[in-house]
Image (tube, rainbow, N blue to C red; front, side):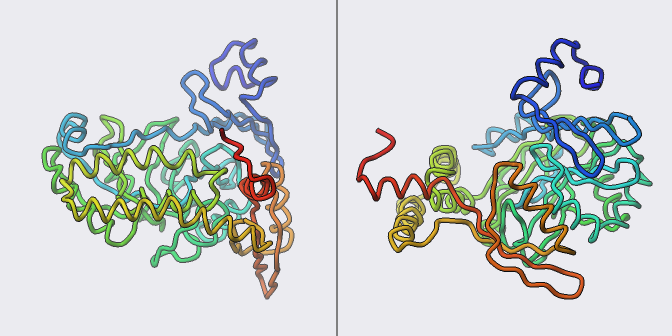
Length: 378
């Protein structure tokens, strides 16, 4: 089954199943295999689904989007004529597919998330039904789940404070995306939300694109994705200075989990922003102070938290339709190697709201330093 679905030899498929590059899971009668790395032309996060009827469906992994460091160099050279600029929202990538009449939400890693699937069905079930009727069963809708009721990435959006889904791609077959204007029209007609569009620019008007991102900078939003209207070339992404530093600040709350991998790529982005935008001495000094604070303050507060005897953990709240949904999600998270502590539960008519703690590796490492006084790094 796997060999035929991915175009592999039987021997290679067997090695893939026996190794650590894939994982076999089950969800509500579906058996699916997740690719944990790129395999041939198939990206990491690809899911090969065996349906209840015995049919096989491949949900391709979402392709990596390269990052722009210098708009003035990259945009005129990369694009052909026009450039569509859409907002890059701060949440988690979710692909939605309809399989045997039911919609399923696949994470960037290729896993069917029970919490996201349940909320997607409740909020957008009828809209997705209309979309797939127009697109066909082979289509895959890709978008960003945002809001504070999110087990993966939480960022407050006034237009989506709790939980919502914004479409940024529709694939009709494999990884063949619809043109941007057609995708936006189809999503809107079905009752789905598109990611915001900042405008359509000529490729040589990169300064106008830079200016368009300043509004996002002032609002503390993540950045933009630049696309050819017809996808004749691959998209590129560009983040705001606010996000570069804010990401470091978030990562340094848990320095042994995200801190080290967060720092250098984002510092590199700031270096080239300073060059392209021509920061003067005052701006450079202000940005350096902001970066230094992002590096030190959250990590110092993490150590102080542990020194007070308090846990070092992410806290978030999720809303479920029932206790069964809650229990299914906690079991799923444990199976993903992310055990969660349920701090409190509030139950009402038709809903269960749970507050979670997600403990971090940094807690153990920092406690060890506080106990021994010795660095684990050098």
